[in-house]
Length: 177
Image (cartoon, rainbow, N blue to C red; front, side, top):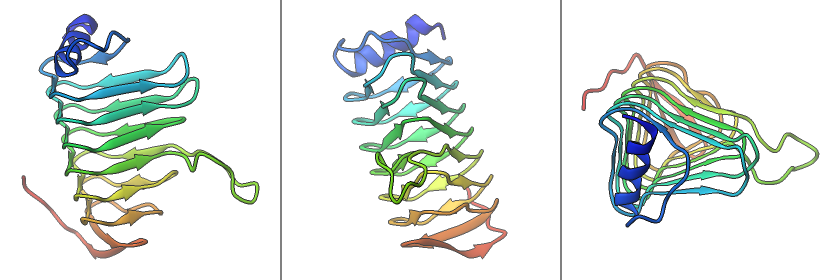
């Protein structure tokens, strides 16, 4: 899908209000209310082939140079928010339930620590409803994040993480949609 096709698809989802640069693949589906909010110039949104952004999904790019990458075949369910000050990368064939939050920043510095750190969600990850993924986290390939979890540390591949803060409760999991 050409960039203009992607913009038109998102425009249809937003009633024609969006006319910004988006790099996207064939088969992108964006339901009504999808929004891309850019607070700084020179930001990038890359959306893979066959991605579904359900209604009221928000992609927020806060700082100059911020990037959101969403891999082929990924589904981001309604009311989920992805907020990038630096970079949020989501792999191929991931499944995000509704109301998921992904943030690569605290939006401020606490005790002089880093304000931002990239988030990476590898291929084939399932994130349960109302889960929150915080800055600097990598979620390994095929992992599952339980509903309502707050992920503050890396999750290894094929692990089930649950709780607040999330911790690994099982390893060697597989999941099927």
